[in-house]
Image 1: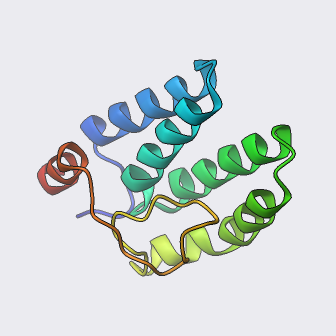
Image 2: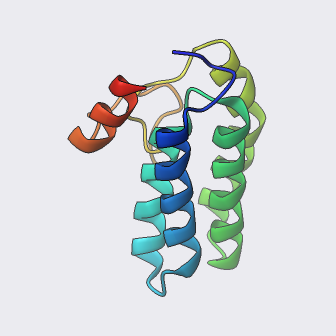
Amino acid sequence: MNRRTMPATVRAAYSTEMRAARVSADTETRWRHLERAHIISQPWPWPHTRNHLAMFALAVRRRDRREAFGQFVRIIVAAPGSALGRYPEGNTGRAAVGLTQPMPMPADLAELLRAA
């Protein structure tokens, strides 16, 4: 997989998830879309970092200090982890999940990334 350029099909899916997170009225739905965007973005440094910035912003808006702190840490390590290929596949990116904990990947996202 080329780590420099996100393939168009992957970028479209990532953009769709990020857009859905921005426009959803329900907080849990926003988090779900951000989590899916996180899984998609992990191999690429800038989208991965951008996703954590969006998660940080949502945590701050919700006044969730634990999540905001967890996202702050993840913002720092996202780009280097992606650039080095050291990220836990399937990890949703939330503060309640360990930084290095791999998780089962949704089948549709696994197929999308496999095809890329």
